[in-house]
Image 1 (cartoon, rainbow, N blue to C red):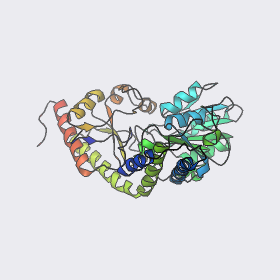
Image 2 (image 1 turned 135 degrees about the vertical axis):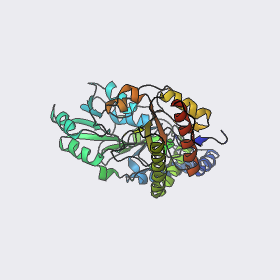
Image 3 (image 1 turned 180 degrees about the vertical axis):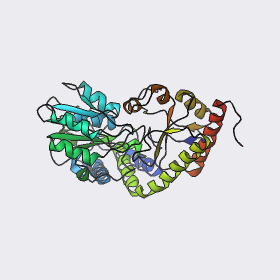
Image 4 (image 1 turned 60 degrees about the vertical axis):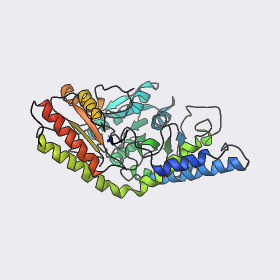
Length: 376
């Protein structure tokens, strides 16, 4: 859409030009990476280079990167298998974690969060101490709706001491905060290419130095037997390029944070009763989840869209529906207030003009909702 403002990076980021060029170049080359001839070896070399780039983004070993069809598959692969024991899942996890854990043999147990959306460590300790002392604990690095960052290293240390393995959904955090698997102390970590300017339909489960997942897809020896099927070479190449660029641009997060903070400051000036969810906790620099009192989020989304501003009401993984947020509910937010929440998320191509446009439209919409003329 010409002239439109895109503020929905947590749903998917625009593909970076370098990524598109790299994928087109790769698509022009034939070759199955499992073939032994020259074309196949070329495809394999492209995969290997991408694996190195993705591993570098999270401080991992390239051989422990398993390419998947996205973050959802990566989370499912991490949780799959009958022998994983008890599964503890934070109340604000993405549905690809929550639903996958619930579908496992024995189901899952939910770890509550506080009013800011951070895991309740005392409640986690109680759950860890129950049972036979084995299982897995799932905690996201940063929330997709509020941007709230979890103290993963601290929580992982508690879980490991109790004999639990730890899986971290880092889909939203990658490229926005520095990540290092060893420092986090997790056994596995999920990533998604399209959150950092890569293509959709590509992700990775990054493994620690020990342990192997039980394959979800069998029928071939690809990905060291961890995920059967011919790899999406062009998509993976794009993922690798996006990972390298995102890692190199981490310093730009200060600029993104300044844009986000300016938005919140100006909206509070226009509406003192504005609610910004999770603002009492560390948040991703690019994310603001806020409520305009008195106006349903679905109405807001449509009004912004008519003005050429794209944003969302939360997770984009619900078939396009605007429904109740399990994240805000877990934080104790009243349903009526949660129903007024929208999410603004910035990224690699965001500009001051984008946020200025959003603020102007928000102010006008708020003024109309209050039955008064917009300020000049």
